[in-house]
Length: 220
Image (cartoon, rainbow, N blue to C red; front, side, top):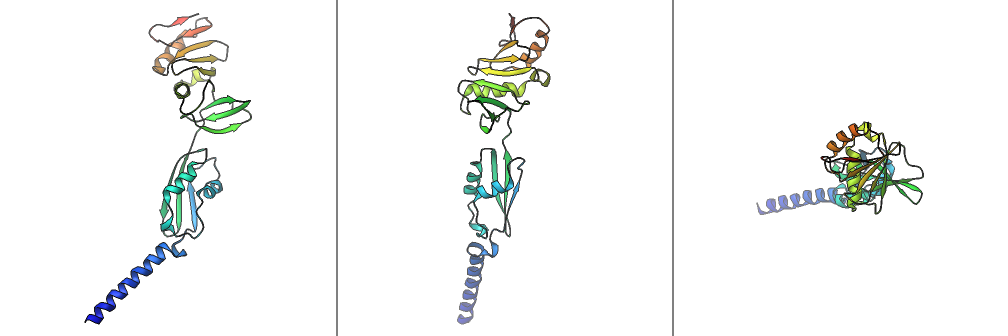
């Protein structure tokens, strides 16, 4: 009886040991494919390379957090989620940063997303994106974030008439229109009210339209 119990214990230990070896050390359940979803402009191969996971590395031993960190080092990737898809696939789900404005820098066009992060540098600015004039552009700059919020909330008919947005501070935002007129916008608050009032004011002849305080507007 004791011998039988000992045999069962040894057999169980052997099965567990074999299973552990298969999962954590053997290439049998290793990474055979890295699947990437959600990317639109970043090449799949670039993301796979950045992930840095060797072929046939046991899937169970892949440090998912480390892989996510490496992928987020790619400038155009906003979020990354890495999951195991048994038996042999590593699945990477990404969301790319979307450029919403252009910041001129040293004769180049820096494309920035809604958080102020530069997504890429181009020789020529895409015509569809508004131009931001900023003293200290960057994700930690309140003026940058406020200016981006303003351009993101402009109604389409007004946005088409804006040539550039100047922000000396979070409360010192102004719009330069394509016809040369200037709009003193102020802060990023009450954007809908300011846009509605401005639509009426632009029918009146003036060079400067101040809607920074929507309740008391001025024209010059």
